[in-house]
Length: 506
Ligand code: DGJ
Image (cartoon, rainbow, N blue to C red):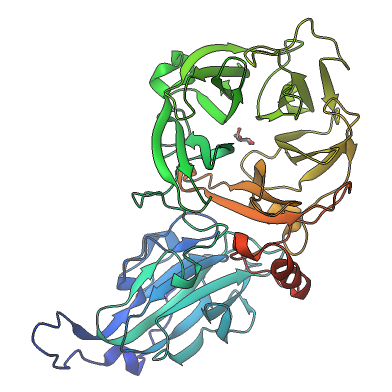
Protein backbone atom coordinates (compact mmCIF):
# COMPACT_ATOMS: atom_id res chain seq x y z
CA UNK A 1 0.00 0.00 0.00
CA UNK A 2 1.28 3.44 -0.84
CA UNK A 3 1.79 5.55 2.22
CA UNK A 4 0.64 9.10 1.77
CA UNK A 5 1.57 11.94 4.03
CA UNK A 6 0.18 15.41 3.95
CA UNK A 7 2.92 18.02 3.78
CA UNK A 8 3.06 19.46 7.26
CA UNK A 9 2.38 23.17 6.95
CA UNK A 10 3.85 24.99 9.92
CA UNK A 11 0.82 26.87 11.21
CA UNK A 12 1.96 29.77 13.32
CA UNK A 13 -0.56 28.81 15.95
CA UNK A 14 1.09 25.50 16.53
CA UNK A 15 4.40 27.11 17.21
CA UNK A 16 3.13 29.35 19.96
CA UNK A 17 4.88 28.52 23.18
CA UNK A 18 3.17 28.09 26.49
CA UNK A 19 5.25 30.73 28.15
CA UNK A 20 2.45 32.77 29.68
CA UNK A 21 2.83 33.25 33.40
CA UNK A 22 -0.35 32.59 35.36
CA UNK A 23 -1.30 33.52 38.90
CA UNK A 24 -0.19 31.02 41.55
CA UNK A 25 -3.02 28.62 42.43
CA UNK A 26 -4.86 29.05 39.14
CA UNK A 27 -3.86 25.48 38.23
CA UNK A 28 -3.85 26.62 34.68
CA UNK A 29 -1.59 26.54 31.72
CA UNK A 30 -1.58 28.15 28.36
CA UNK A 31 -0.41 27.43 24.90
CA UNK A 32 -1.64 25.39 22.00
CA UNK A 33 -3.73 22.29 22.37
CA UNK A 34 -3.64 20.09 19.33
CA UNK A 35 -6.99 18.40 18.66
CA UNK A 36 -5.18 15.14 18.11
CA UNK A 37 -3.82 15.32 21.67
CA UNK A 38 -7.20 15.99 23.27
CA UNK A 39 -9.16 13.26 24.93
CA UNK A 40 -11.76 12.75 22.24
CA UNK A 41 -13.18 9.36 22.99
CA UNK A 42 -16.39 11.07 23.97
CA UNK A 43 -16.82 12.68 20.57
CA UNK A 44 -19.90 11.94 18.57
CA UNK A 45 -19.24 9.63 15.69
CA UNK A 46 -22.40 9.55 13.73
CA UNK A 47 -21.48 6.35 12.03
CA UNK A 48 -18.71 3.81 12.19
CA UNK A 49 -16.05 3.04 14.68
CA UNK A 50 -14.93 5.50 17.29
CA UNK A 51 -11.51 6.61 16.30
CA UNK A 52 -8.69 6.26 18.75
CA UNK A 53 -6.90 9.52 18.20
CA UNK A 54 -3.20 9.76 18.50
CA UNK A 55 -0.89 12.60 17.68
CA UNK A 56 1.55 10.41 15.90
CA UNK A 57 -0.06 8.36 13.21
CA UNK A 58 -3.59 7.10 13.18
CA UNK A 59 -3.77 3.48 12.18
CA UNK A 60 -7.55 3.67 11.80
CA UNK A 61 -7.17 6.38 9.20
CA UNK A 62 -5.70 3.69 6.99
CA UNK A 63 -2.54 5.68 6.48
CA UNK A 64 -0.14 7.42 8.79
CA UNK A 65 -0.46 11.11 9.50
CA UNK A 66 1.08 13.45 11.96
CA UNK A 67 -1.25 15.78 13.83
CA UNK A 68 -4.36 14.57 12.02
CA UNK A 69 -7.64 13.64 13.55
CA UNK A 70 -9.50 11.21 11.36
CA UNK A 71 -13.27 11.11 11.66
CA UNK A 72 -15.98 9.70 9.46
CA UNK A 73 -18.20 11.70 7.18
CA UNK A 74 -21.18 12.18 9.51
CA UNK A 75 -19.27 13.00 12.66
CA UNK A 76 -19.31 15.74 15.24
CA UNK A 77 -16.71 16.69 17.79
CA UNK A 78 -17.75 19.35 20.25
CA UNK A 79 -14.87 21.15 21.89
CA UNK A 80 -15.42 22.69 25.30
CA UNK A 81 -13.32 25.81 25.19
CA UNK A 82 -13.54 27.31 28.68
CA UNK A 83 -12.63 30.93 29.04
CA UNK A 84 -9.64 32.42 27.33
CA UNK A 85 -9.49 30.16 24.34
CA UNK A 86 -8.47 32.31 21.46
CA UNK A 87 -8.06 30.76 18.06
CA UNK A 88 -9.03 27.50 16.43
CA UNK A 89 -7.09 26.75 13.30
CA UNK A 90 -6.13 23.85 11.11
CA UNK A 91 -6.81 22.29 7.74
CA UNK A 92 -9.40 19.88 6.43
CA UNK A 93 -9.20 17.20 3.76
CA UNK A 94 -10.67 13.91 2.69
CA UNK A 95 -8.39 11.15 3.93
CA UNK A 96 -6.29 9.44 1.25
CA UNK A 97 -7.63 6.15 2.64
CA UNK A 98 -11.24 7.11 1.80
CA UNK A 99 -13.05 5.58 -1.18
CA UNK A 100 -12.46 7.30 -4.52
CA UNK A 101 -15.99 8.70 -4.58
CA UNK A 102 -15.71 10.24 -1.10
CA UNK A 103 -17.18 13.73 -0.93
CA UNK A 104 -17.81 15.65 2.26
CA UNK A 105 -18.17 19.10 3.71
CA UNK A 106 -16.47 20.24 6.90
CA UNK A 107 -18.01 22.94 9.05
CA UNK A 108 -17.66 24.56 12.45
CA UNK A 109 -20.70 25.48 14.51
CA UNK A 110 -21.61 27.36 17.63
CA UNK A 111 -24.93 25.71 18.59
CA UNK A 112 -27.13 26.11 15.52
CA UNK A 113 -25.04 28.89 14.00
CA UNK A 114 -22.54 27.95 11.36
CA UNK A 115 -19.28 29.82 11.84
CA UNK A 116 -17.36 28.36 8.96
CA UNK A 117 -17.76 25.81 6.18
CA UNK A 118 -15.39 24.32 3.66
CA UNK A 119 -16.45 23.83 0.07
CA UNK A 120 -17.68 20.32 -0.73
CA UNK A 121 -14.37 18.45 -0.80
CA UNK A 122 -13.47 15.46 -2.92
CA UNK A 123 -10.74 12.95 -2.45
CA UNK A 124 -7.37 14.29 -3.61
CA UNK A 125 -8.45 17.93 -3.23
CA UNK A 126 -5.82 20.01 -1.47
CA UNK A 127 -6.38 20.53 2.25
CA UNK A 128 -8.36 23.71 2.98
CA UNK A 129 -7.06 25.92 5.81
CA UNK A 130 -9.25 27.66 8.39
CA UNK A 131 -8.60 29.97 11.29
CA UNK A 132 -11.35 31.23 13.59
CA UNK A 133 -11.43 33.57 16.53
CA UNK A 134 -13.25 31.46 19.12
CA UNK A 135 -12.72 33.94 21.95
CA UNK A 136 -16.46 34.66 22.34
CA UNK A 137 -17.47 30.98 22.49
CA UNK A 138 -17.43 28.41 25.25
CA UNK A 139 -17.86 25.57 22.80
CA UNK A 140 -17.73 24.88 19.10
CA UNK A 141 -18.68 21.79 17.14
CA UNK A 142 -16.61 20.39 14.31
CA UNK A 143 -18.89 18.62 11.85
CA UNK A 144 -18.37 16.56 8.75
CA UNK A 145 -21.34 15.85 6.50
CA UNK A 146 -21.00 13.51 3.61
CA UNK A 147 -22.68 14.33 0.34
CA UNK A 148 -25.81 12.26 0.00
CA UNK A 149 -25.00 9.16 -1.97
CA UNK A 150 -21.32 8.94 -1.08
CA UNK A 151 -19.90 6.34 1.25
CA UNK A 152 -20.83 6.99 4.86
CA UNK A 153 -17.64 5.36 6.02
CA UNK A 154 -15.54 7.88 4.13
CA UNK A 155 -12.70 9.11 6.30
CA UNK A 156 -12.15 12.79 6.78
CA UNK A 157 -9.24 14.56 8.38
CA UNK A 158 -8.91 17.56 10.65
CA UNK A 159 -5.24 18.23 10.06
CA UNK A 160 -3.01 20.24 12.39
CA UNK A 161 -6.16 21.40 14.14
CA UNK A 162 -5.39 23.20 17.38
CA UNK A 163 -6.75 25.74 19.83
CA UNK A 164 -4.67 28.42 21.50
CA UNK A 165 -5.72 28.84 25.09
CA UNK A 166 -5.00 30.35 28.43
CA UNK A 167 -6.42 28.66 31.51
CA UNK A 168 -7.95 25.20 31.48
CA UNK A 169 -7.17 23.05 28.50
CA UNK A 170 -9.94 22.55 25.96
CA UNK A 171 -11.75 19.19 26.04
CA UNK A 172 -13.93 17.24 23.66
CA UNK A 173 -17.41 16.43 24.99
CA UNK A 174 -20.43 14.43 23.85
CA UNK A 175 -22.62 17.32 22.90
CA UNK A 176 -22.90 21.08 23.20
CA UNK A 177 -23.96 22.28 26.63
CA UNK A 178 -27.09 23.80 25.11
CA UNK A 179 -28.20 20.36 23.88
CA UNK A 180 -27.81 18.61 27.23
CA UNK A 181 -31.58 18.30 27.69
CA UNK A 182 -32.24 17.41 24.06
CA UNK A 183 -32.54 14.19 22.17
CA UNK A 184 -29.40 14.07 20.02
CA UNK A 185 -29.95 11.32 17.45
CA UNK A 186 -26.79 9.34 16.81
CA UNK A 187 -24.88 10.73 19.80
CA UNK A 188 -23.44 8.64 22.59
CA UNK A 189 -26.26 8.34 25.14
CA UNK A 190 -25.06 7.89 28.73
CA UNK A 191 -26.91 6.57 31.77
CA UNK A 192 -26.87 8.08 35.28
CA UNK A 193 -23.38 6.64 35.82
CA UNK A 194 -22.00 8.20 32.66
CA UNK A 195 -21.83 4.79 30.97
CA UNK A 196 -23.11 4.49 27.38
CA UNK A 197 -26.59 2.91 27.39
CA UNK A 198 -26.71 -0.71 26.25
CA UNK A 199 -30.28 -1.28 25.07
CA UNK A 200 -30.01 -2.12 21.39
CA UNK A 201 -32.97 -3.48 19.45
CA UNK A 202 -34.93 -2.20 22.41
CA UNK A 203 -38.41 -1.27 23.43
CA UNK A 204 -39.91 1.23 25.86
CA UNK A 205 -42.82 0.53 28.23
CA UNK A 206 -44.47 3.18 30.39
CA UNK A 207 -45.49 2.15 33.91
CA UNK A 208 -47.12 4.96 35.93
CA UNK A 209 -45.01 8.04 35.29
CA UNK A 210 -41.84 6.11 34.49
CA UNK A 211 -40.58 4.76 31.21
CA UNK A 212 -38.59 1.53 31.13
CA UNK A 213 -36.24 0.84 28.22
CA UNK A 214 -35.01 -2.74 27.68
CA UNK A 215 -32.64 -3.91 25.00
CA UNK A 216 -29.64 -5.98 24.07
CA UNK A 217 -26.45 -5.36 26.02
CA UNK A 218 -23.78 -5.66 23.34
CA UNK A 219 -20.96 -4.22 25.44
CA UNK A 220 -19.08 -7.51 25.13
CA UNK A 221 -19.86 -8.08 21.48
CA UNK A 222 -22.32 -9.71 19.13
CA UNK A 223 -23.20 -12.90 21.00
CA UNK A 224 -25.30 -12.96 24.15
CA UNK A 225 -22.45 -12.51 26.60
CA UNK A 226 -24.31 -10.16 28.94
CA UNK A 227 -28.11 -10.36 28.56
CA UNK A 228 -30.98 -7.91 28.53
CA UNK A 229 -30.27 -4.51 30.08
CA UNK A 230 -32.92 -2.17 31.46
CA UNK A 231 -33.04 1.56 32.23
CA UNK A 232 -35.73 3.79 33.72
CA UNK A 233 -36.54 7.45 33.14
CA UNK A 234 -39.04 10.14 34.08
CA UNK A 235 -38.35 12.31 31.04
CA UNK A 236 -37.08 9.94 28.31
CA UNK A 237 -33.76 11.83 28.25
CA UNK A 238 -32.09 10.91 31.54
CA UNK A 239 -31.89 7.15 32.07
CA UNK A 240 -31.18 5.36 35.32
CA UNK A 241 -29.39 2.02 35.09
CA UNK A 242 -31.67 -0.78 36.38
CA UNK A 243 -29.03 -3.37 35.53
CA UNK A 244 -29.12 -6.60 33.56
CA UNK A 245 -32.64 -7.90 34.19
CA UNK A 246 -32.29 -11.12 32.21
CA UNK A 247 -28.67 -12.29 32.44
CA UNK A 248 -27.35 -14.42 29.60
CA UNK A 249 -26.42 -17.03 32.22
CA UNK A 250 -30.11 -17.59 33.00
CA UNK A 251 -30.89 -18.76 29.46
CA UNK A 252 -30.34 -22.22 27.97
CA UNK A 253 -26.71 -22.63 26.99
CA UNK A 254 -27.19 -22.37 23.23
CA UNK A 255 -28.59 -18.83 23.65
CA UNK A 256 -25.63 -17.59 25.69
CA UNK A 257 -22.13 -16.88 24.41
CA UNK A 258 -22.55 -18.80 21.16
CA UNK A 259 -26.11 -17.64 20.51
CA UNK A 260 -28.06 -14.41 20.52
CA UNK A 261 -30.91 -12.82 22.43
CA UNK A 262 -32.29 -10.02 20.26
CA UNK A 263 -34.97 -7.32 20.36
CA UNK A 264 -36.42 -8.01 23.84
CA UNK A 265 -39.69 -6.23 24.69
CA UNK A 266 -41.83 -6.14 27.84
CA UNK A 267 -45.62 -6.04 28.25
CA UNK A 268 -47.69 -6.02 31.43
CA UNK A 269 -50.60 -8.37 32.00
CA UNK A 270 -53.15 -6.88 34.43
CA UNK A 271 -54.87 -10.27 34.92
CA UNK A 272 -51.79 -12.04 36.25
CA UNK A 273 -50.06 -8.83 37.38
CA UNK A 274 -46.89 -10.12 35.75
CA UNK A 275 -44.46 -8.60 33.27
CA UNK A 276 -43.81 -10.68 30.14
CA UNK A 277 -40.58 -10.25 28.25
CA UNK A 278 -40.69 -11.67 24.75
CA UNK A 279 -37.51 -11.83 22.70
CA UNK A 280 -35.86 -13.51 19.73
CA UNK A 281 -33.56 -16.34 20.79
CA UNK A 282 -31.27 -17.90 18.25
CA UNK A 283 -28.15 -19.96 17.63
CA UNK A 284 -26.28 -21.84 14.91
CA UNK A 285 -26.42 -19.00 12.38
CA UNK A 286 -30.02 -18.06 13.08
CA UNK A 287 -31.36 -21.56 12.38
CA UNK A 288 -33.01 -22.10 15.78
CA UNK A 289 -35.21 -18.99 15.38
CA UNK A 290 -37.46 -19.10 18.42
CA UNK A 291 -39.51 -16.76 20.56
CA UNK A 292 -38.13 -16.60 24.08
CA UNK A 293 -40.30 -15.81 27.07
CA UNK A 294 -39.24 -14.63 30.51
CA UNK A 295 -41.52 -13.42 33.33
CA UNK A 296 -41.09 -11.11 36.30
CA UNK A 297 -43.37 -9.79 39.06
CA UNK A 298 -41.76 -6.35 38.74
CA UNK A 299 -41.02 -4.35 35.63
CA UNK A 300 -37.35 -4.13 36.51
CA UNK A 301 -37.04 -7.85 37.05
CA UNK A 302 -35.30 -10.03 37.70
CA UNK A 303 -36.88 -11.91 34.81
CA UNK A 304 -37.02 -15.69 34.86
CA UNK A 305 -36.67 -17.62 31.63
CA UNK A 306 -39.75 -19.75 30.87
CA UNK A 307 -39.55 -21.20 27.36
CA UNK A 308 -38.53 -20.85 23.74
CA UNK A 309 -41.18 -21.61 21.14
CA UNK A 310 -42.21 -21.12 17.55
CA UNK A 311 -45.59 -19.40 17.87
CA UNK A 312 -47.45 -20.63 14.76
CA UNK A 313 -47.04 -22.91 11.81
CA UNK A 314 -43.63 -23.94 13.17
CA UNK A 315 -42.33 -21.04 11.11
CA UNK A 316 -39.05 -19.31 11.98
CA UNK A 317 -39.22 -16.50 14.53
CA UNK A 318 -36.62 -13.74 14.18
CA UNK A 319 -36.88 -9.92 14.48
CA UNK A 320 -39.89 -9.28 16.68
CA UNK A 321 -42.02 -6.86 18.60
CA UNK A 322 -45.09 -6.84 20.83
CA UNK A 323 -48.26 -4.77 20.70
CA UNK A 324 -51.06 -4.48 23.26
CA UNK A 325 -54.37 -3.17 21.94
CA UNK A 326 -56.89 -1.04 23.87
CA UNK A 327 -59.05 -4.12 24.54
CA UNK A 328 -56.11 -5.86 26.23
CA UNK A 329 -55.36 -8.25 23.35
CA UNK A 330 -51.62 -8.68 22.92
CA UNK A 331 -49.80 -9.62 19.74
CA UNK A 332 -46.37 -10.80 18.65
CA UNK A 333 -45.23 -9.33 15.33
CA UNK A 334 -42.21 -11.00 13.80
CA UNK A 335 -40.19 -11.94 10.76
CA UNK A 336 -41.29 -15.48 9.84
CA UNK A 337 -40.79 -17.78 6.84
CA UNK A 338 -37.03 -17.23 6.98
CA UNK A 339 -37.65 -13.47 7.00
CA UNK A 340 -39.71 -13.45 3.79
CA UNK A 341 -43.00 -12.61 5.54
CA UNK A 342 -44.05 -10.82 8.72
CA UNK A 343 -46.49 -12.64 11.01
CA UNK A 344 -48.80 -11.16 13.60
CA UNK A 345 -50.00 -13.63 16.21
CA UNK A 346 -52.50 -12.96 19.00
CA UNK A 347 -51.42 -14.16 22.43
CA UNK A 348 -53.84 -15.80 24.85
CA UNK A 349 -55.21 -13.86 27.83
CA UNK A 350 -52.18 -14.70 29.97
CA UNK A 351 -49.76 -13.25 27.34
CA UNK A 352 -47.65 -16.35 27.95
CA UNK A 353 -48.60 -18.36 24.84
CA UNK A 354 -50.18 -17.91 21.40
CA UNK A 355 -53.95 -18.06 21.19
CA UNK A 356 -54.99 -21.65 20.43
CA UNK A 357 -56.22 -23.17 18.27
CA UNK A 358 -54.31 -21.18 15.68
CA UNK A 359 -56.50 -20.14 12.78
CA UNK A 360 -55.09 -17.99 10.02
CA UNK A 361 -57.07 -14.79 9.62
CA UNK A 362 -58.63 -15.25 13.08
CA UNK A 363 -55.76 -15.66 15.57
CA UNK A 364 -52.86 -14.83 13.32
CA UNK A 365 -52.08 -13.33 9.90
CA UNK A 366 -49.34 -12.95 7.33
CA UNK A 367 -48.26 -9.40 6.45
CA UNK A 368 -46.66 -8.48 3.13
CA UNK A 369 -45.93 -12.07 2.05
CA UNK A 370 -42.57 -12.31 0.28
CA UNK A 371 -41.81 -8.67 1.10
CA UNK A 372 -38.65 -9.50 3.12
CA UNK A 373 -39.24 -7.26 6.10
CA UNK A 374 -37.84 -7.29 9.63
CA UNK A 375 -37.41 -4.96 12.63
CA UNK A 376 -41.20 -4.41 13.03
CA UNK A 377 -42.55 -1.64 15.27
CA UNK A 378 -46.34 -1.43 15.67
CA UNK A 379 -48.64 1.10 17.33
CA UNK A 380 -52.18 2.45 17.15
CA UNK A 381 -53.49 5.99 16.84
CA UNK A 382 -57.25 6.50 16.80
CA UNK A 383 -58.71 3.60 14.88
CA UNK A 384 -55.68 3.10 12.64
CA UNK A 385 -52.92 0.56 13.27
CA UNK A 386 -49.43 1.43 12.00
CA UNK A 387 -46.45 -0.76 11.35
CA UNK A 388 -42.95 0.33 10.35
CA UNK A 389 -40.46 -2.33 9.27
CA UNK A 390 -37.09 -2.41 7.58
CA UNK A 391 -36.00 -4.66 4.78
CA UNK A 392 -33.52 -7.48 5.36
CA UNK A 393 -29.91 -6.40 4.80
CA UNK A 394 -28.23 -7.58 8.01
CA UNK A 395 -26.73 -4.64 9.91
CA UNK A 396 -26.78 -2.34 6.88
CA UNK A 397 -29.50 0.27 6.65
CA UNK A 398 -32.13 0.09 3.94
CA UNK A 399 -35.46 1.69 3.00
CA UNK A 400 -38.23 1.33 5.57
CA UNK A 401 -41.83 0.39 4.80
CA UNK A 402 -44.97 1.74 6.43
CA UNK A 403 -48.14 -0.35 6.56
CA UNK A 404 -51.52 0.61 7.97
CA UNK A 405 -54.58 -1.44 8.85
CA UNK A 406 -57.99 -1.10 10.48
CA UNK A 407 -57.51 -4.23 12.55
CA UNK A 408 -54.34 -5.86 13.96
CA UNK A 409 -54.82 -8.92 11.79
CA UNK A 410 -55.13 -6.73 8.72
CA UNK A 411 -55.45 -6.47 5.85
CA UNK A 412 -52.27 -4.40 6.07
CA UNK A 413 -51.76 -1.92 3.24
CA UNK A 414 -48.31 -0.77 2.15
CA UNK A 415 -48.02 3.02 2.40
CA UNK A 416 -44.48 3.66 1.16
CA UNK A 417 -41.41 4.97 2.97
CA UNK A 418 -42.36 7.34 5.82
CA UNK A 419 -38.85 8.81 6.11
CA UNK A 420 -38.33 12.12 4.41
CA UNK A 421 -35.40 14.16 3.12
CA UNK A 422 -31.73 13.38 2.48
CA UNK A 423 -30.72 9.84 3.46
CA UNK A 424 -34.35 8.85 3.99
CA UNK A 425 -33.79 5.85 1.69
CA UNK A 426 -31.35 4.54 4.27
CA UNK A 427 -33.76 5.44 7.12
CA UNK A 428 -31.10 7.96 8.28
CA UNK A 429 -28.76 4.96 8.70
CA UNK A 430 -31.04 3.29 11.22
CA UNK A 431 -33.28 0.28 11.61
CA UNK A 432 -36.62 0.50 13.39
CA UNK A 433 -37.07 -1.01 16.84
CA UNK A 434 -40.04 0.72 18.53
CA UNK A 435 -42.48 3.63 18.28
CA UNK A 436 -43.92 5.29 21.40
CA UNK A 437 -46.31 8.20 21.94
CA UNK A 438 -44.56 11.49 22.70
CA UNK A 439 -45.81 12.52 26.16
CA UNK A 440 -47.97 15.61 26.37
CA UNK A 441 -48.42 15.97 22.63
CA UNK A 442 -51.34 13.97 21.20
CA UNK A 443 -50.64 12.91 17.63
CA UNK A 444 -46.86 13.06 18.12
CA UNK A 445 -44.81 9.90 18.29
CA UNK A 446 -41.17 9.00 18.73
CA UNK A 447 -39.47 6.70 16.25
CA UNK A 448 -36.76 4.65 17.98
CA UNK A 449 -34.11 3.30 15.63
CA UNK A 450 -30.77 1.53 15.97
CA UNK A 451 -27.81 2.87 14.07
CA UNK A 452 -25.85 -0.36 14.01
CA UNK A 453 -22.08 -0.35 14.06
CA UNK A 454 -21.27 -3.87 12.84
CA UNK A 455 -17.56 -3.51 13.61
CA UNK A 456 -18.30 -2.64 17.23
CA UNK A 457 -21.94 -3.47 17.98
CA UNK A 458 -21.76 -2.19 21.56
CA UNK A 459 -20.96 1.19 20.10
CA UNK A 460 -24.11 1.24 17.97
CA UNK A 461 -26.12 4.39 18.49
CA UNK A 462 -29.74 5.28 19.08
CA UNK A 463 -31.66 7.57 16.78
CA UNK A 464 -34.95 8.79 18.22
CA UNK A 465 -36.96 11.15 16.04
CA UNK A 466 -40.35 12.82 16.54
CA UNK A 467 -43.14 12.74 13.98
CA UNK A 468 -46.75 13.80 13.76
CA UNK A 469 -49.79 11.87 12.54
CA UNK A 470 -53.03 13.54 11.59
CA UNK A 471 -55.72 11.31 13.08
CA UNK A 472 -57.05 8.85 10.53
CA UNK A 473 -54.24 9.50 8.06
CA UNK A 474 -52.34 6.65 6.43
CA UNK A 475 -49.30 8.83 5.87
CA UNK A 476 -46.81 10.86 7.87
CA UNK A 477 -43.24 12.06 7.49
CA UNK A 478 -40.34 11.28 9.76
CA UNK A 479 -37.80 14.11 9.32
CA UNK A 480 -34.24 14.35 10.50
CA UNK A 481 -33.35 16.59 13.46
CA UNK A 482 -29.78 16.94 14.67
CA UNK A 483 -31.28 17.65 18.10
CA UNK A 484 -34.81 18.19 19.39
CA UNK A 485 -36.78 18.63 22.56
CA UNK A 486 -40.21 17.40 23.64
CA UNK A 487 -41.18 20.95 24.56
CA UNK A 488 -40.74 21.98 20.92
CA UNK A 489 -43.25 19.46 19.59
CA UNK A 490 -46.24 21.20 18.11
CA UNK A 491 -45.90 24.57 16.53
CA UNK A 492 -42.16 25.16 16.94
CA UNK A 493 -41.05 21.88 15.52
CA UNK A 494 -43.65 22.00 12.73
CA UNK A 495 -42.33 25.42 11.73
CA UNK A 496 -38.80 24.14 11.98
CA UNK A 497 -39.55 21.14 9.77
CA UNK A 498 -41.13 23.44 7.16
CA UNK A 499 -38.04 25.62 7.13
CA UNK A 500 -35.65 22.71 6.61
CA UNK A 501 -33.62 23.04 3.47
CA UNK A 502 -32.27 20.00 1.65
CA UNK A 503 -28.72 19.11 2.54
CA UNK A 504 -28.93 16.87 5.56
CA UNK A 505 -26.78 17.18 8.62
CA UNK A 506 -26.22 13.78 10.03
C1 DGJ B 1 -30.84 -7.58 11.30
C2 DGJ B 1 -31.72 -7.66 12.48
O1 DGJ B 1 -32.67 -6.66 12.42
C3 DGJ B 1 -30.91 -7.56 13.75
O2 DGJ B 1 -31.76 -7.60 14.85
C4 DGJ B 1 -29.93 -8.66 13.74
O3 DGJ B 1 -30.60 -9.88 13.78
C5 DGJ B 1 -29.09 -8.59 12.49
N1 DGJ B 1 -29.92 -8.64 11.32
C6 DGJ B 1 -28.10 -9.71 12.43
O4 DGJ B 1 -27.43 -9.70 11.19
